[in-house]
Amino acid sequence: MKLPIIQMEHVSFAYRGEEPLIQDVTLCIPAGQWVTIVGANGSGKSTLVKLLNALLLKNAGQIHICGTELVAESKYEIRKQIGFIFQNPDNQFIGQTVRDDMIFGLENLALSKAEMEDRLQLYASKMKITHLLDKHPGQLSGGQKQRAAIAAILAMEPKIIIFDEATSMLDELATGEVIAIMQEMHRSGKYTLISISHDMDEIAASDRVLAMERGTIIADAAPADIFNRQDLMQKCRLKPPFIYQLKEELHKRNISIGNPTNDKELVSALWQLYSNM
Image (cartoon, rainbow, N blue to C red):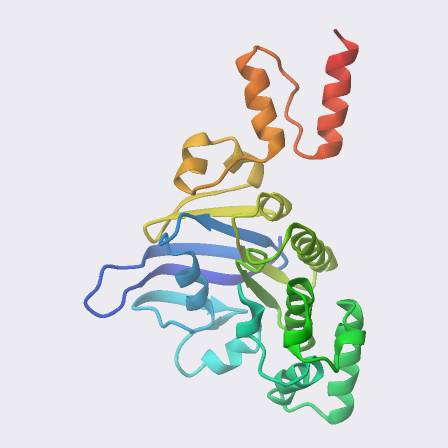
């Protein structure tokens, strides 16, 4: 079993004089896992991930990242282990070109020029943006911007990458591309992924789902288990994937197709049902 890379023990957070946004959260995430966080607006999703790299400072409890306790003295070192992909990639760009933006992050790691150039070329190639390096971010499409933002984060080689609604502003094609990138990153085994999302394909691709309500974790389960709980889906303002909607409609008609969890299994189940008619 892999060692935990993130541990939170009885963590709470509130702005001074206000109601808690995170209440007594205890959580353990093993290295290499892909965890999706879901919940209605105001449930505490973004607050939770901001606590992980000290964008917000907890009021109570303990947080350990990569075995180091997150305190004021350690937050800068811990931030080097965590990459953050924002909902709006425009909020992430600093440089006048994609190249400048990637180099800026690497300069903060005090790398040599040769190593910075090697990383820039490597991750620009991985994200298929080499031809965009000398373009201004404003010249890029939404999908290209998000690819460039991901490349800049990967070049810093963090162990943990947080995607905060990273596909919510993209069209269907660009969303699919970003999810495919996340799946490839997950398969590599090099990263622990945490994504806040309402996209059902993104949620379904993850290993584990944390459902939040009023600053607490109300469910911690595999995606399929979450999708099968209608009460939970309603609380989190989620609609089940087509496969689960179809199973429910067939179940109302006393027709069972088993428990397919992807398109290939669904086609096989429907073909078996047709063959038995």
